[in-house]
Length: 307
Image (cartoon, rainbow, N blue to C red; front, side, top):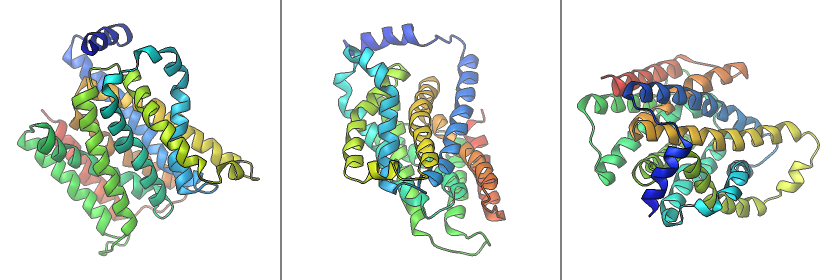
């Protein structure tokens, strides 16, 4: 019953692209737009933390994403895919709520450029989890591209700005977040990809938004919101939640539907370019290890997508 409904919904709400080249082109356009939005999210996290705690930024952005989808959910509540509640909950927790908390925690100790660059670990975990748990296969060329991207990310994690070996425990929070991203992308690809992107995304936040609200309610968020000088940070948090966690997620799920989980995860290779730009604009220094690591990661993107 659900499959019949979702196929009909896809026909009504999403354009049918008969040409594989047209699908590929649209996927690239959406991928670049998502990279632009998510690459900006790290500088938004940084400035949101000037007025709010990591707990408030992490839970607040997820709750605000629910607010973004609330009008649609109220109109389409009878179409909520109730038989998919478990993958929706898993996707919401592993792909959004937990990583949001981890990135907010690390964002208080790492510059936004490095945080954005470390996202490039996601394709590696997407590939490994897909192979181990979801029966996915990949060509040798794709394996090489993912491993090359992983090498570039490791270079960024373990080498300081001066090029010397160093250790940063907060960087591993971001590694853990990308592991959860890998699970989420495979869950969406396996269990939710036949749903219209808007319905799938809204339903996911309907599952985790109330959990985020409970977490937010345990903090002093109302006091901080009304504190003098908190308005700029609040506006950035609203943008982070509604645009970064809301609108961009619709686009991202559509990319998965048009292509594959591995292709969609390569957005994390493009994110560092945007993150570094905003970091430079905000006065963050850029050193050669960061440039080298990003270059290696982007070469991996080329190998993954090269026919």
